[in-house]
Image (cartoon, rainbow, N blue to C red; front, side, top):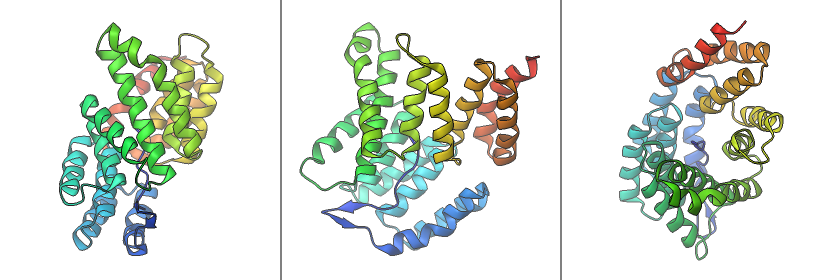
Length: 261
């Protein structure tokens, strides 16, 4: 599970990040929302070059991870953390990228460290929600990949952390997505229609996150909603035709729908 990029707004000791940080990134986010991917990346990089602070490092790292390049995002996040080691949103970007390059134990340790630090340092609910959701993904990876003892250790923590993330930030698309996938994949007590509804809600909350859209299209197809899946696929093709990672990830779903009646 890959949580979305969230904040450009870092809270430290109860004070919001300077407005200049958000203002200098508005153009980059506008290009992202228009799905002008190469131009958006250039704008994020230019903003960081002009304002090399924690918020700009986090924004570029998140953008690179969002567009399917977590290793590049990790390099940016870790460079930023070397300069701003106590910045929580930047640490969240680092943790997300770590998980996405399969270093989920390191990501888990970073999330746990920051959640413990939050007890003594002011941290926004959005950032806390992000750490909870990343931690849920790390625990899910460990439960799946590290054997039966890890499964027993982490299996019940995944949903707990997803639920905490949703409580902290009800508009956090990746947490809604995580809840949806949990409903769909849970072997006991899962609810596929509810899960698909949650994926649809997550996609509405963040239409720039192609990973959510890939799973939404796939689950619609698996549930027999071929027409809806094809309609969503057509919109996906329009939005992500210039994004190689998205084109790669949607191919199995395209093949599945191509074989369907």
